[in-house]
Length: 112
Image 1 (cartoon, rainbow, N blue to C red):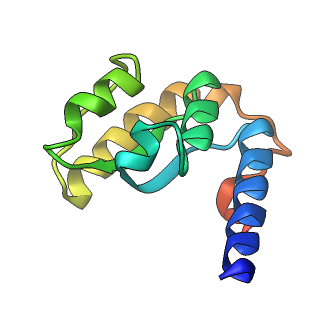
Image 2 (image 1 turned 90 degrees about the vertical axis):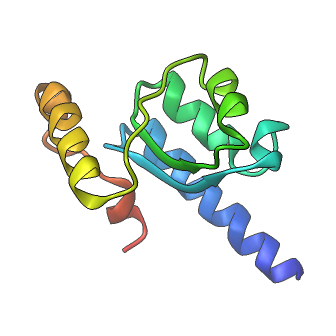
């Protein structure tokens, strides 16, 4: 159990570093009670939102009001399908394309 926590903490530190370096996007598996209460991955989500880095996150209907509060109303609700996600990402990434430095490192590259 201790080793698992250490690996999760290390991953969180690496993701936080990528966010500070200007990651393109943060993808989180879900927004739940822990995040609502400021625990879990809340600190990474907050860092991304503060840096205007788009966050893709699954939010249940039950937790949606908590998510809106957490995100300060900054939210786009997408259908849960690839086409909706691709369409949204094209709009967001084109808007930000001019702001990305040539030596920019993505979150995915950090985990390679």
